[in-house]
Length: 122
Image 1 (tube, rainbow, N blue to C red):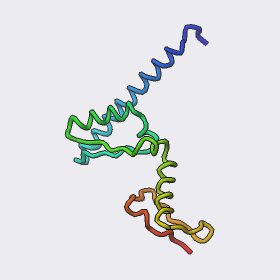
Image 2 (cartoon, rainbow, N blue to C red):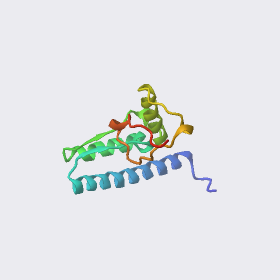
Image 3 (cartoon, rainbow, N blue to C red):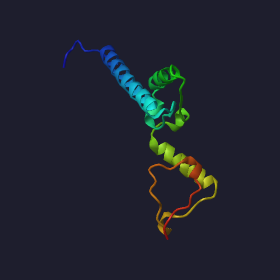
Image 4 (tube, helix red, strand yellow):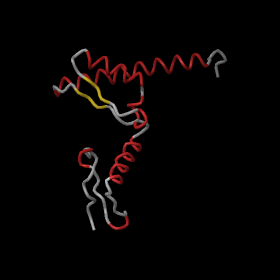
């Protein structure tokens, strides 16, 4: 170990890494928006909790008249929280079926407006 390495050095390295990563993500997001001609972007999951990334994406998309949407921070801890939120919404609607009584459909892209979709299977 280098005795000269300090906590401040670690913090500086982390900040520089974060800047580099947010710069690349913002550039790729902007390129994707241009490619698709869509300038509204949703950022969710754990990455949506990164405040510096939010700032960078907001300013990048604003320059081209775009806008970025995020869930509330407490729902951005990880995708598990988003999945649990969907489950809570289903439960609140009275949509319950014990897992041992039937299978469920795997939906990698499950629109929130379809939360009431019933489980499939027997």
